Length: 378
Image (cartoon, rainbow, N blue to C red; front, top):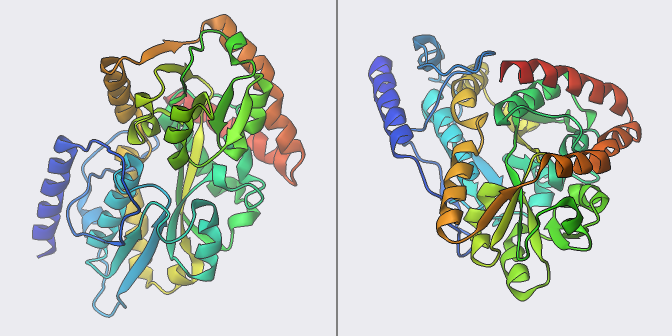
């Protein structure tokens, strides 16, 4: 029977890879979404980054769930359920459900419908939710060592190099601020841009422009002469339309998800963007699982990470850029001389921040070491 289920799962997973998904904005906070048993795109994780079909051992690990308690995890995520990153987390949790033979399910509260994004870790610790997807940029004051990852300084060859670097860094460094939580995986995304209502052609064009960003990145934008403005992404469309801000800084796919290209017709790619994220589980919830359920979840990570978690939003970013061109957005990249000016301005930020945190210099050195390894592979 398990072999039949395995064949059906692989067939559905392969079909889901072929059809793909296109993001669209959510008009309102969604109701809780029950987990589904539909197939999800998946693959195995390996140091080389290769993608292969799941092994029989992965699909049928010899686990015994006959006496396992059933768990329905409350899943909080700040993103709308139509966002492609949210879709990836749903794919992963669907794989968990399949691997645990339905004994570990979930109910999703998307678009901050259960808790605000910056309060997710508190909600996880209190038990209000049992699993959450958390962006490092929301971790000011909560993640002193991890917060260092958001600053430019270490260069990454592509999104996969960043993802594997971040995941390994968590495993090796073990940031003390999250040791009371169960880290399921960590990863990152490159592919950032400034989307603006006025053209930004050179480094000097940044001067005195009011641009929305996350709190973590205010010193970076300020180093360029920008006036950084912190606000949640859901407020940016109206802020751009009314002239409260002249631009938004963030990952390209979010521009499409929130339709910012309708009100901001200039986009310049940023070579320094590296957003990092973590999927955490409440430790009591994790410890309440049987050893076989825990092993199945860890196998689900191995099965999913390489194929659609580590690559992040590269495919969707390219699709978004093509859509923007069709809709009249002027897309550009900085010249080498302007990139050099950005690097000179932002260069000290990550190192200075690391120096201000206990264990920061050692953690930064380890980040550089791990990044060099993964950059060589990608």
